Length: 229
Image (cartoon, rainbow, N blue to C red; front, side):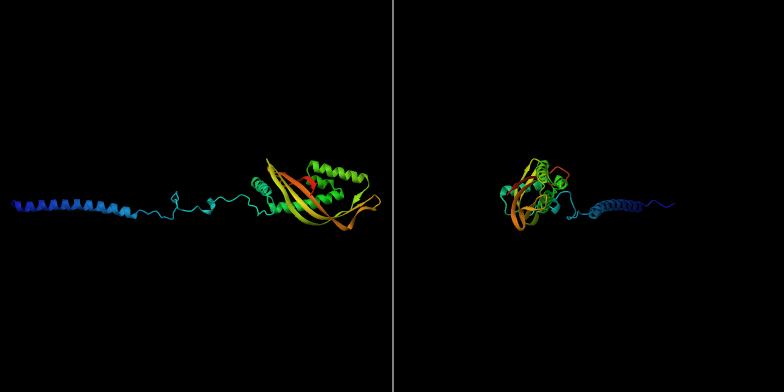
């Protein structure tokens, strides 16, 4: 039997206590360092990534800047009331384009004149409203009853100018002034010339009003009124 040695026992006890203290300190150190490492591994938000809210000083993107609907070309040489009417019509009708309208007006002017001269009621029906159509047809009927025919020719359109423009509710009306050179000849039932001359063109000044309901799906305008300029 080994004799009891108090000194050795005390040393063993001290070693055990020191080991426990070391283990305790090690756990504390691991706890602190481990938490720090976790924080360091977290991703830092990138300042270029969307945060759901723009800083007050950040300028808006181009998509956020309002753009004028259906912009029109610069309108010159007209009264302010005319320009205002054009702008109102363009705002109410997304398909309206002033340049295209003026080109279409010149085409309609030519087609209506030629249809009237030739007695083409079908074309007039497509291009005119009821009142204007009935006026043209009455003149054609009277001419045909007298046995007269027209041998007219549109030489050129010298000028096309906006005379007035307005939006009345949903009804848009634009009046165009046409200045044209026309050679006109009237013949009787036997083909004899009774008026006019093909050699001398006469300047004609006409104010035609075209109208369209901007709510209609049909994009075409019709001749609403005719007058001399």
